[in-house]
Length: 145
Length: 145
DNA sequence: CTGTTAACGAGAAATTATGTCAATAAAGAA
DNA sequence: TTCTTTATTGACATAATTTCTCGTTAACAG
Ligand SMILES: [Zn+2]
Ligand SMILES: [Zn+2]
Ligand SMILES: [Zn+2]
Ligand SMILES: [Zn+2]
Image 1 (cartoon, rainbow over the protein chains, first blue to last red):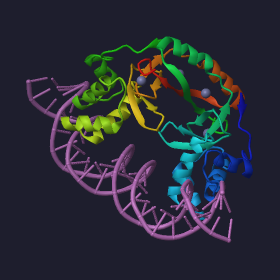
Image 2: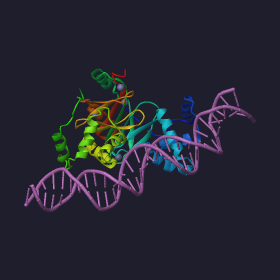
Image 3: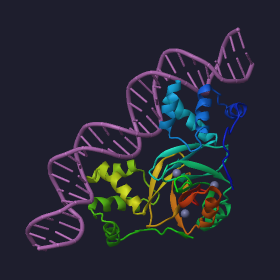
Image 4: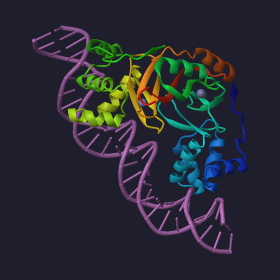
């Protein structure tokens, strides 16, 4: 198990390559959206991101589109906090889980949480071909405890 | 591990008792909302439920409020399907997980999936006081495979 | 440098969810 | 049963969230 490291998750070159790999263009707007989430390890709602980025001339439409793209690239994860708020958290590309604080509504990423045994068990019992999962943990973060 | 049984999950008396236990009133509208979800094991969005129930004189406002109440009572679970659609699935009161078919959107409940070991591990590593979790599995159901 | 076309912003529109308030009816007491 | 209390309801307004349209701009391959 490892906790997400602080600081820049992706260099400019890595980010450009990530977009270009799937035929997407690397634009200043897309970098700005990504950097914003990168700078907020606890996550943001689209509304919060738009409020900040509109001051930099980036439109709400572009924020929505970029959040969608980053999700498909696997480096932006969504969580529901207890009140149904839809938040997004930056991460390195790949699968991970998130811990959500019920007090301050912030989300922290954790990786290497193996559920393969459970998936196999469920596949056997139900006949489902299990392809993946979404797992969120709820609780109180150290600051709020 | 156990799979959800078919048919009526709660008798009228059980349902009334469930509401009254927490000071909520048992109304025809609330029963109708519950029975609708009970009759749709694959789940419904609020919009779908409202479309059906408005034909029976039940308002959108009441559908939203009842869905919220049933969630708090623990017998209505939400899932995101792969496209972010927000669906609700009836279940017996209590904690459980759901398997969602990516083809037919069918959601099947399963219980007794123990994550306590994982929760303790995460609590140690992160300092979070872990209080609960939300876990969905995605895959293909036997009929769609 | 040039051409192609994905991506952009502005604004409208659609969808989803919540708030207000007078009328109604569920639950418990008498 | 009847009465009293008050949570619940429906209609409607409003707010919040998300998607769409279209003319313009600029990323990127050649
Ligand atoms: Zn996982
Ligand atoms: Zn906190
Ligand atoms: Zn669980
Ligand atoms: Zn299926």
